[in-house]
Image 1 (cartoon, rainbow, N blue to C red):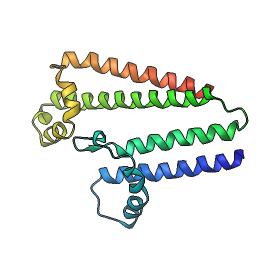
Image 2: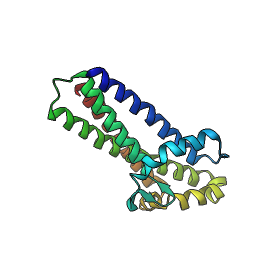
Image 3: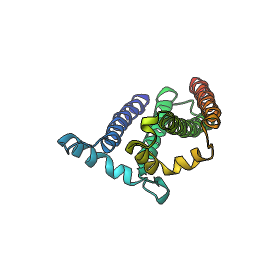
Length: 182
C-alpha cells in the first residue's frame, strides 16, 4: 500500500512541475508553441477549480498559486501515508496543515519584501525613478504599492525590509523544524 501512495505522490509532483511551467509560460511573452498549448490544455482545467473573485489582484491571477498549494498538500499527505501507512495520526495531518499555512504566510511576506526592494531600487536609481518600468511596476502591483506607500521615504522602508526578511527567515526555520517531525 505504501508503494501505491508513493507512486501517487510522485505523479502529483510531476503534475506540479507541469503546473509551475504553465504559470511561468503565462509570465513570459512568447509565441504559442506546441509545448505551451499542451501545458495550457493539461493545467488550465485544474487552475479553473481555484478561480474565485478574490484570486485576481490587479493583473495577477493567483489561482495557479492556490492550485500548486493544493497539489503540495496532497503530495505531502500521500508521502506521509507512504512512509507510515499504519501509524497515520490526526497530529500528522495537523502538522501538514500548519506547515502549509506557514508556507503561505512566508511566501506572502517574501513577495512583499521583493516588491518593496524593487520599488526602493526604482527610487534610489535616478535613471529608473520615472522610467516606463517603474510606471508599469506601480500599475501592475498597485495592491502591493499601497502597502509600500505607508512607508513614505527610504529611511522608513529599510526597517520594513529588515522586519519582513526576519519574519520570512523565522518562518522558514519553523517550517524546517516542522518538516523534521512530520
